[in-house]
Length: 78
Image 1 (cartoon, one colour):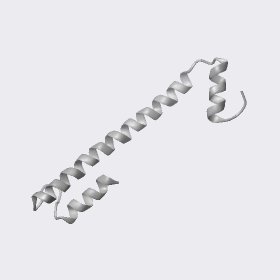
Image 2 (cartoon, helix red, strand yellow):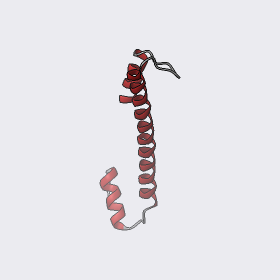
Image 3 (tube, one colour):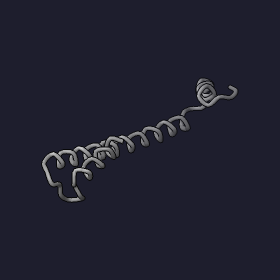
């Protein structure tokens, strides 16, 4: 959301894809790019963590304690 807001502010200040009319507008455009990179990294990292959690849950040993933990997480019977 911050990246989109900064990008809109940069476009409002007169920046296009390659140039900005003032140093202030250039700073806003640079901030937008920084926030966009951080957003991309956060989304990819979150996706990797979710997939890792699912794989660990599915690959866990089938001990009675594991069945209890799955039942507590997903609901259902032991």
